[in-house]
Image 1 (cartoon, rainbow, N blue to C red):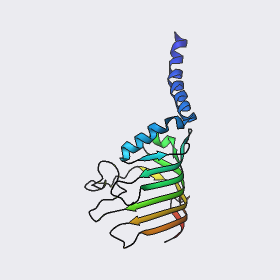
Image 2: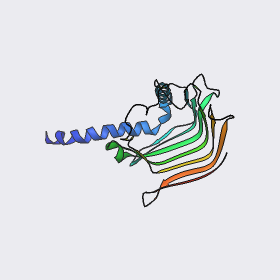
Image 3: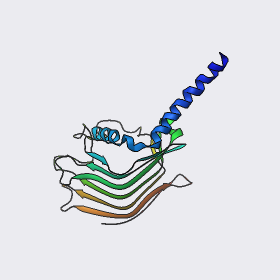
Image 4: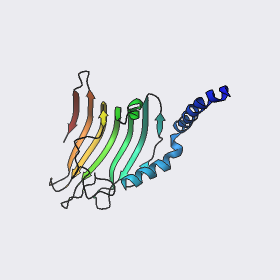
Length: 194
């Protein structure tokens, strides 16, 4: 009986770890479900056209390529975002404390089309609350509990179209990066042209 009682905690820990290893071994098998979840959440078309990868450990890393997020029907461009590659690493211990700490985020070959209309519609507002900004009317002083330690973008393009500019504003980003240095200061560096 003692031997059996000793095995219960071991099994309760081992089975979830085995399931996580199974999911991490081939994230592509869940591609359709992930696309549907993201599309339903954003209320936009979402496609993940390249292999997905998940690495589990003290840091959890999710990588994707050929990401497509569509625009709302009123927008002039067919897509809000196209990304050649994206990789985000989060610290697992922080998740257990209810915080999201992104230790590293890397993006390459991004095309981002931002668009607004004179009536206030903005294509960067997602979901059912598209008509209202998520910060309107609420006290946002508590913050989101997200810390991004290191961030990088390479070979990317951003375009803004809207009533604030006469012609589309285009920014070409050769490289952009952010890091929190040893003194906890934010360092930012960017090479771009407008």
